[in-house]
Image 1 (cartoon, rainbow, N blue to C red):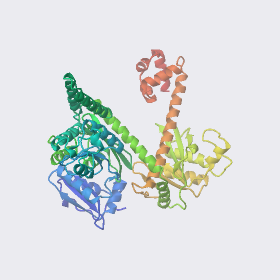
Image 2 (image 1 turned 120 degrees about the vertical axis):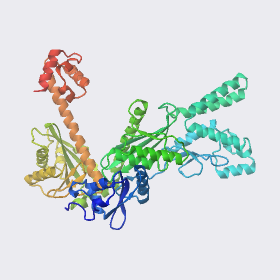
Image 3 (image 1 turned 180 degrees about the vertical axis):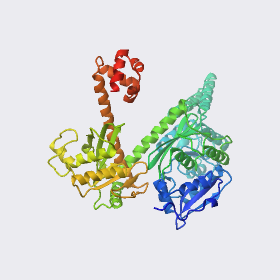
Image 4 (image 1 turned 45 degrees about the vertical axis):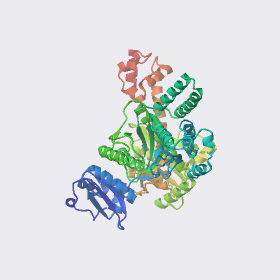
Length: 627
C-alpha cells in the first residue's frame, strides 16, 4: 500500500486560515465536507500514511480524486458554510440522517386576518406560530379540544368559515362554545385575534399567568353575584387546569430549553430531543443517524444541533450530553438564527447539565435515546427483507458458496487473566437461537488467542458426531447434543488477525473444512479473513455489517455475564470459608462495597466498618482475598 494518495496537494499550497474543505471523486461528486480552524493542519491528517488512517477515513481518501477548500474570515463563518454545503451536496461520508418523517405541530396562523388553530406538518405557513413537534397527532388534537374551552378561537377550515359568513349560521363549535364565532360577528375580528394571541401566549409557557387571571375573574364575578359569568370562568379555569395536568411540571416556570440525548455505537446514533417551555415538556422528537465515519460524541452533538435547528427555532438554552469543540461558534450561529427569525435578541447558551432538576431531566432524555437505539436495532434485525439482504451481502463479501444461514460467534472474557470464560452464540436465518448458546470455562490460558483456540477445539470436537456432544461444562439430553453438533456455515470470532489465526489453527487441527471463518475487530468494525493482509470493509450503514455487529455484541454480552457470575460465585465461596462469616454477612459486605473489586481493594479498617464485621474478621477477610 502506498504511503498516501498521488493527488495530495503540497503542504505549502494549503492556507493556515479557518475554512471549509470538500473532497470530490473522479466524477466531481462531493464525498465529504468538513471545516477547520487551520486548513493545513486539518488536511494534513487526511494525507498521513494510508496504513495509519482510520479505515473509514482511508476509504474516503481512496475514493476521492481531489480536495478543494474555501478560506473564510472566522470559525463561525466556517461553521455556517459547512452546514450550507452539507445540506446542498448531501455528501455520502458525512452523517446521514434517517429522519424521513415530518412531525406534527400545533400552529396558530397569527398572520391571517382571522387566525386559526390547526394541527399540521407544514412548517411553511406564513405568519404562523408553531408549537411542538409532537410524536402523536391524537395528543395535539386532544390538547386543542381542551384549550378551545378556555380560548374559543377558530379551528375550522377556510371553506367552512366562508360558508358560515354567507349563511349567517355558525358551525357546531360556535354553538357549543368552542369558538367565539367571528364568522357571524359574535365577537369582532380584533377581539378574536386577542383570543388567538392569548392562546399562543399560554402555549408558549405563560400558563400560570392565565390561570391566576381567570381565577381572580371568577372570584370577582361571584362576589358581585354575577353567577353566569362566574360559571363561565369556572369552566374556563377547569379547562386550563386539565390541559396543564397533561404536561408534567419538570422545571421552574421560567425555564425555556431544548434537551438532547444521544446514544450511539459504531454504526448508528439515536437522538432524543425534549422541548421544554415554561418548565413543561411541550414536545418530543427522535431520529436516527447513520454514522459513515467514526465520530466521537462531541462531533455528533455539533451535527445534530445543526440539523435540529435548520427548521426549528432555538430557545435561549440548549442542553447537550457533551460540548463540541466549536461550542462558541455554535452558540453564535444559534443566536443569529433567533435574531434573523425575530424570536429575540438574547444569546443562546449551549451547556451540559451538571446538577439539579435540569440534570435529572437530561438523564431521562439520555435514557430515552438509549432505549430508542435498542428499539431501532431490534426492529432492524427483525425485518425479514433486511435480514435476507444482509445474509446475501455477507455471502458475497466473504466469498461464501452459500448464504450463512447458521452463524456462530465466539468471545472471551476475563478479569486480569483470571476467571477466563468464553461464549458461543448462534444465529439462524439472522435471528438469535438462545436455546443453543453455550458457555465455556477455561482453566488456564496464556492469552486471548490461546483461549479462542481452546474454545474452538472443544466445540469442533462434537461437530461431526451427531450422536455425541455435550455442553462445555455438563452433559445434556439427546436433543441438546444434536444442537451442539449442528454444522455452521460461518464462524465469527471477536478480534482481528491474531484471533482469526488461532481459530484457523483449531479448524486445521480438528481436520474440519468447508466452514467459512472470519473475525470482526471492534474499533474499526473491519472483517478479517484467515491469511489476508487487508480486511474486508462492509459499508458503514449496511445491514450486513449491522448483523455481524449484533452477533458479536451478543457474544460479548453472553461472555461477560457468565464471567461476572463466576467472579461473584468465587468470592462467595472464598468468603464462606472464613469462620464466623455467614451468608448474611457476605451479602452485607457486597452490598456495602458495591462490587467485588471494591471489596478486594479495601483496607481492614474499611472492612471493619461493615455491620456485623469486627476488626479480627476484617483482617482475615483482607488476607484471604489477597491469597
